[in-house]
Amino acid sequence: MEAAPPLPRIARRPWWIPHFLGGVPDVPPDKLRMLGVVALALFFEQYDFGMLGSALPRIATDLGIDRADYGGYLSLIRLGSLPAFAILPLADRIGRRRLFLFCMVALSIGTALTAFTQTPAQFVAAQMATRTFMTAGMSIAFVIITEEFPAEHRGWGLGMLGALGASGIGLGAALFAAVDVLPYGWRALYALGIVPIFFLPMFRRGVPETRRFREQVAALAEPGPPRGVLATWLGPVVDLLRAYPRRAFLVAGVALLSGLGSVAVFQFTSDFLLRDHGWEPWQFSAMLVLGGGLGIVGNIVAGRLGDRIGRRAVGLAAMLAFPCAATLFYLGPSWALSPAWIVFVFCVSASGTIQRAFATELFPTRERGTAMGLAEVTATLGAALGLALVGIATHAGLELAHATSVLSWTVALAGLSVLLLPETGGRELEAISDPGAAPRGH
View 1: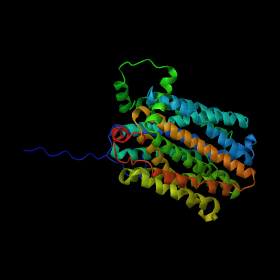
View 2 (view 1 turned 120 degrees about the horizontal axis):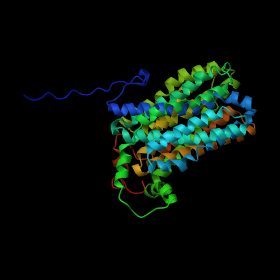
View 3 (view 1 turned 135 degrees about the vertical axis):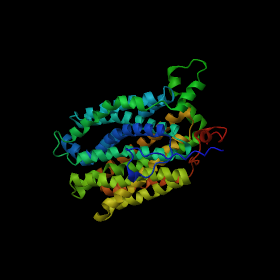
View 4 (view 1 turned 30 degrees about the vertical axis):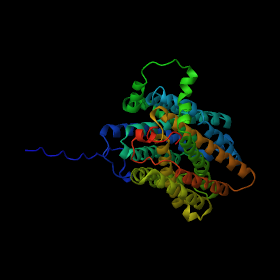
């Protein structure tokens, strides 16, 4: 008598995945647990990331920053992400796990120290240092999920990580509603950034080194000619640019154009609503929490659809829709504020998932962390340039709403550039990046 075929395994929904984020595919339980721990770390990282946008008017009032100077100061803070490119190649040398844990500790300390700054210069310096480790930690988080999740559900894993991490912005927004009654105001919100330190034992247990990195280390275990410290550090950067110049250029270009148009749109939403439309902090927080819950679903939708129909089509659609919604938000009627905001959050969430997928899937294990760093650095340059352009435009007398709306259309150019990248959805990483499977230079 033949044994009955095994019943198909049904993935159980972990308690930390809300039902509104959709179903859970058939992913091994250990991968889901790892996703939960990495997402918790990203949750805290996004808390700090979103706090600046929410609390900007209160910070500016307290520290004496003029509205016309917002663009310049915010541009400097964004440039704090640039040193991450010097750190991320280490993930391809010493491992994803060790660098990820170090970045979590560093960004927690930096966020808490921000609460004690007394001048604009101190605030900018603290936030620049924090952004370095924030960017590096976030980049490694997506590399870990890319390397550990099965090909058919990799997009879902990246999207879910993005959605769960973005919930940290919602927490910051909810706490911002009480900014006027909290002791020390916005400083109390930043002081809470020290909390991740207490979760360090959980992060150490729940984030293992990726299998692909371990295999790479084993493959390179045979001794070779000695290399200097600088050559060892910059080796992944050189290898990346030599083997895949076209892919690296396109990934960097998409990130640059997207950052140029999207960051300015997001950075000034709080100030625009509180100052130009007379909203109260609790109203902004309600929109951010309730509307943001709908907007971050874009991560999941993009991940799921990217696995099914391909990354390029999804990325193009999201990036073309973003500037339409952003322009409606800043230049449209008052009744359109919340709906337009939800739509452009959905679009930028979706496009972010697609961009991270390309940045991590198109390159081999030995250079994957470096490639993600390249994308983040160029996105930072784009964001800093966009914020600086807003500052120049407002100093010249152009309304903030008009400046951000015009810049948002560079995201559409990023969407068109995505069509030039190879399709990666549903393919094994080795098949995508193996030079034998794709011509060198692609």
